[in-house]
Length: 149
Image 1 (spheres, rainbow, N blue to C red):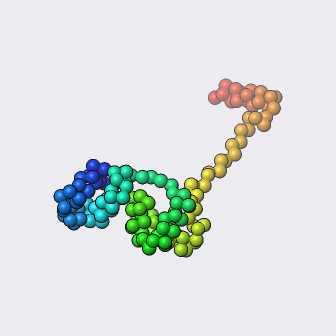
Image 2 (image 1 turned 45 degrees about the horizontal axis):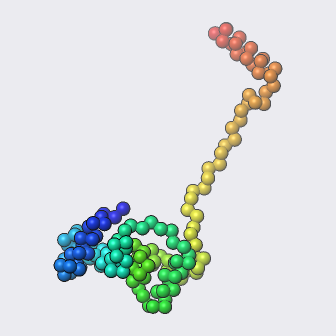
C-alpha cells in the first residue's frame, strides 16, 4: 500500500500547479520524493483524478505489446509510456521491455506462480479389509484382554 493517500496526492498536485511551487518544494512540504511529485502531476494531467487511484491489474500480452510498440514508434521513454498508458510503476514497463528483448513475445505471457500441489498419502484402513468373522474374533480378544487387566 502507498504511504501517500489519494488526498495527499491531490494536495501535492494543487501545491505544484496552483501555488506555483517547484517539484522540490512540493516534495519537501508533502514528505515525498521529487520523482513522486513528478509522477503524480504527469498522471493527473494525462488521466485526471482517475490516474491517481491505485490499480491492481493483470496486463494482457496485447496491452504489453501496445506499450512497447508505442515506445518504439514515438521514441517515448519508459516513464512517458507508463504515464500515457496509466501504469502506476514505470519499473513494470522497464521489466516488460527487458523481458521482450531477452525472450521475445513469449516472455510476456503470464507465468504460473502457484506452488505445486501436495500429494495425498494413501491412508490404510485395515478394518475395511477384514471380514465380519475376523472383526468378531478381534472384538472378543480385546474384551478378554480388558477383562484380564
